[in-house]
Length: 387
Image 1 (cartoon, rainbow, N blue to C red):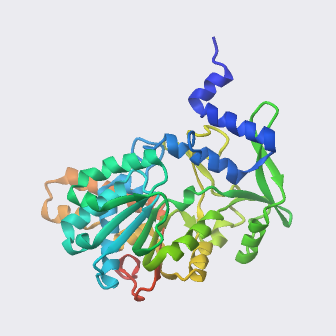
Image 2 (cartoon, rainbow, N blue to C red):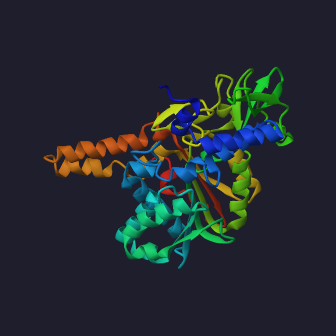
């Protein structure tokens, strides 16, 4: 006997979440794509991030830089320790990480500080902003393995009111829910989500929210004719709140994205929305609802401008490949080749890790933005040309 559609849904998507979305649309009419993405990823019971806490791993749906190897976290720690020194080595230095995933980056930063820089470690206070209890449990288990320094870690449901140190994110903003638009002639239309007669989700085009029109007016660009595009209105709002919380220190952002002219280039016909399931990518947000991740590249032009109007100065902007190379990501590989030529298996293993992290077609193309407030205008090593 062939499986029914409902039986297929229980395997390939979250049937309760799909039913909830259909009922909401039936009762209230089509919803914005942002509202659809918000529910698919963050619904309190059925959302992807609630039910897939281990997705950010080698065996999960997608792999982030910290999951590739501990060298990434070690080099981030090395850079943040330099920021602490630029600030004059204050006796307390906050690292506030939002979107910590499995906790691997925090774990590796703490391990490096404990082993390599005792003074920095003694000043360090690490806070993870994590509203999802299931993710916090995962992080506590990961970080508990680092030893005594784990006692310096605390969890918060939202950003603290005061930060003196560094606010750190890795692939957080590209997971914020986005509005979608398409250019038709000289006008923009916003993508809403409706349910067809057979229950399938599909696009419905309507006039855009005024905030979207204002966003493009501020940029002075539009997507190309017939092009779809994403608008992340939550990212600049988030950065403004971060700037208000930051008394003195830095905002260090790792994320996929482009300057606005590249993000909304006329050749980018389908935008940048991507869905990930078991490390395979697709562009269809209406399949595997609740069981696949969704991301969209962020607009670094708007992020930088928002920072400037909120009191943050841009101190550095580069790609992850250049950032890691400047901080010495290849040093350990070269050392093996020079001093231990017999250990070629280890050499090739480390070389592969480095290539994974700096590959310009993958993780290496992640952008790294450093903004500061109340700090000396010193360009740190990861952003300094010629090193």
